[in-house]
Image (cartoon, rainbow, N blue to C red; front, side):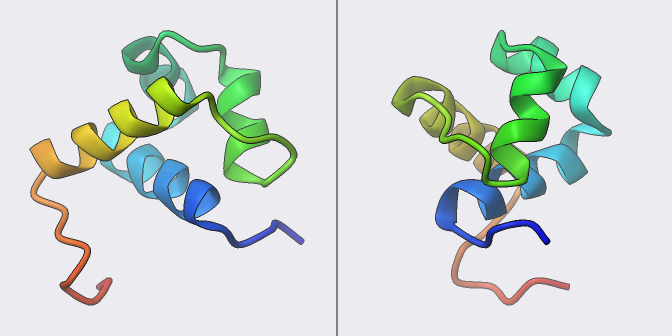
Length: 69
């Protein structure tokens, strides 16, 4: 079972917004295996990548105060 943290939730939401690990990896400048590890809580993304993932979500209209669909 995957770990549920602010990091995993953010990466998973970014995955949903960008169509999968390969696409998100390209946008974030990471590998697909890094994306998988971050999404499942096996490691924590570097601060710069984490903040970029938040920026990507904001660009796609994600609002942390709005409940998830």
